[in-house]
Length: 217
Image 1 (cartoon, rainbow, N blue to C red):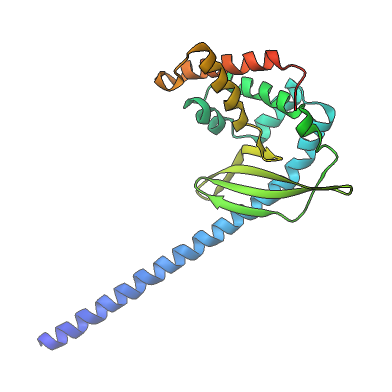
Image 2: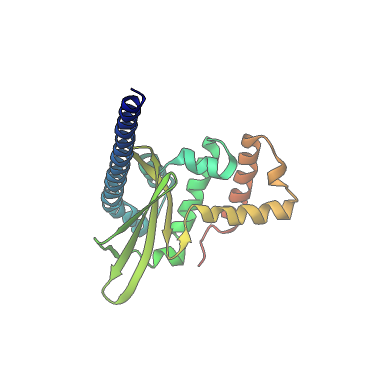
C-alpha cells in the first residue's frame, strides 16, 4: 500500500512539475510576444512623429509649437521627475524653453534636410524602449538618432529622450544646471523638497537661456 501511495504521490508531483514548467514557458512566450509588439509600436510611433519633429527644426521652434509637441508626444511627468523627483509644471515649461534653444543650435539645424530611414532597431530596457534610427541625406553620411519611450507593463508610453548626433536633447539640460549650481554654491542634492529643487533647476536653465538666446554650436 505504501508503494502504491508513493507511486501516486510521484505521479502527482510529476504532473505539478510539468504544469508549473508549462506555465513558466507560456508566461515567457507571452512576455516575449508583448515585448515584440511594444517594440513594433515604438518603431511605428517614430515614423509618425519624425515628420512633425523635423518640421519644427526646419521652421524654427517656438513656445507654441514646442509646447503642443511636448503635450502630445513627450512623457513630461517622467522627464520632470528625472530632474527634480516630482512632476513640476514650471520645470516642464522651462525644459521646453531649453529644447527650443537646443533645436535652434547649429548642430541640430544641420540635420533638417535629412530623411528617416525605414530600417530601425528597437531595444527594450527597464521601463523604456529605445528606437535606434538612421537619418539619411544623399550628399552626406548617415546620422544616428535615438528616441526613447516610456513603457508601463503592456503599454507603450511617450518620449523620454531624443538623441541626435549623440546629443541627448533633454538630458543635456543638466549641464547648464550643474554649472549654475556650482557658480552659486547650491548643493542641489542637499535640498530635500523636490519642488524647491525644481525651482533651482528652473533658475539654472533660465540663466543659461538668457545668456544664449541666439544659440550656439
